[in-house]
Length: 276
Image (cartoon, rainbow, N blue to C red):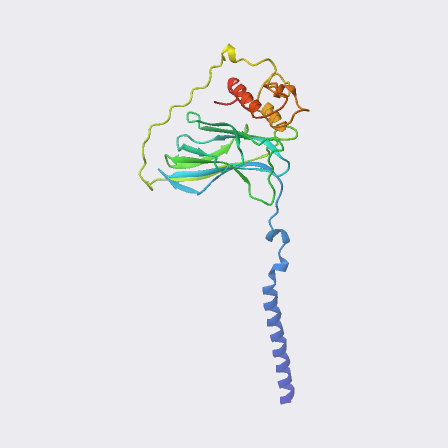
C-alpha cells in the first residue's frame, strides 16, 4: 500500500515537472503568436515632402535646426519646390543651408518675413532624381530658426509645394508632413537683438522693354504662360540635341543646357513666378 502511494506521488511530480517545462517553453516562444506585421515594418513607396525639427522642445533664444526631406520612390523627379509656412511671431529664419542637398541647380531660396513663408525651388536635370523605399529620405535643405516667443510652432509645406515627374512634367507630390515643436520660457543663452534684414524688393510688374522675351520662347508646353512646368520640361530635355520643344532652346543653339537654364530662370523672375 505504501509502495502504491509512493508511485502515485512520483507520477504526480513527473506531471507537474512536465507542466512547468512546457510553460517555460511557451513563455520563451510568445513571438510565434504575434502577427508578422507587428514586428516587421511595412515600407510603402511614396512621393512626399517632410519638414522635421531636431528636437521637440526649445527655449526662447535657441537656434532651431530643421530639415526639408523629400521622397520620390515611385519615379524620378526633376523639379522640387518647397513652399513653407511658419509662425513669424514665434520664430525667425536665421539661415538656409543647402550644402548637403541633393539639388545642385537652384532656382530660388527666398524668405518673406512679413508673411512667414519660405520658397525653395531647385532641380536635377534629366534623368532626374529618385529615392529608394528602403533608404532614408533625401535632404533638400536645412533651415535654422531663432526661437522668439513661447508657443506651439508648426512649419508646414503648403499645397503649392511641388515635385515634378521627369517623364510627364506633372506634379506627383501626394504627401506633405509638418514639423511641430514647442518653445518654452527661460533663456538657454542670451537673446541677441539684431536688426532684421531689409526684405528684397520684388521686381516691377512692368519689365523693361529691352528684356521682353521673344513671344513663346521659354513656353515649353505652349500653354501661353511661362511657369515652373516649363522649367521641368527644360530639365527633362537637358543635354539633348534634338527631340525637344523648340521653345525651351532659349538661345537657339540647337541644344538644351545651362545657358537655357539661366535664361528661363530670368524669365521666371520677370514673370514674378520666383524672386531673384
